[in-house]
Image (cartoon, helix red, strand yellow):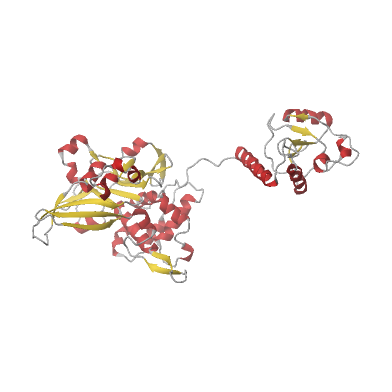
Length: 492
């Protein structure tokens, strides 16, 4: 660098990005003012060397040259700093030179320049960024606060529910504006934030959720305040009922001036709350009189489908082939059964009832009825029930009657679900544990323990209170399922 003019000082050093790799890019040794001004006087004294990163180090040692320009975008490298340097003034001049095509074989518009530079920056950041410790989002155990595993397994399953997750993380409940005391939806908001928006992986204490039920004035929740194990399915129903009532105040636009007006949503198909959007479907029952052939149809809502095991488990064919969710669904929604019914036309008391699913929910909850009572004693049906990772519900819908599923493949695909979570009851009921009929039907005192499995991406995890471990598909499929949560394939 033989110029008599003073050399422009280097810019302050910026955080180190990465030492340039040999061969990519090439570095041209130029006086700094050639880049900034293109001065003819200085150009006469320039060094025309073009070299690699390794050659740059050797050349700098021999010639004492300090500054180099990399060949792709003209970024300035300081040999003394051993790094690229940046200064707003220098960067502005560099961009002006780039706009004239100084560092490329063709001239480019400034918009193209920024597009290319952003791609370079994105690539640079992706190759030089240290990744955070690998862990799946939303994976946390829940502490058992004294026989609360029935609550933990339901909460774990809901934490992985895509619709509920998006609703609560998207401020769907608006807890900042909520004035309710002991609000279950606010407690759910807190849980989703703790699971999906915070880096902690240690166990979570769901004491706020439990307190909401303890402090409730509803008589149905009184048993939850005890230190006895409860029915996980009953808790699921209580929780979703509370969430429905809290979020049922739908906001609908006014037809006159477009201003929003509150409207109390009814607990039917017109309700647009998050619980209805997620879990609610409709079944259709058709009763046919065996005397005159009169047909009566009724439609009912459901939040989950309960599949009976007691009668099916005693059939010889089931004992040979094995019990499955498919066989349970066929018994409930494809086979007609005799029912108590008096025809209003002919008075005949013989009728057959056939049920089918009129509309499917986004998240299908299936309860396998493992608990029963006989002579006042509670018992558990421990029959192995197989269930699939992917479930086709089309054969059990009203539309499927008399139709070939191959004739409407798109409709069939719209009825396909993927398994998301499995709730498991471990252990037997104590022999001779006598329960009243009312007690058993509401919230039975169920000895044993609950665990759950949930899928996050393609990986399954086992949740045993605060302990979380990896699980295989075979672990899941061999589990003694009590509740199955299936998500419609388009959302899974």
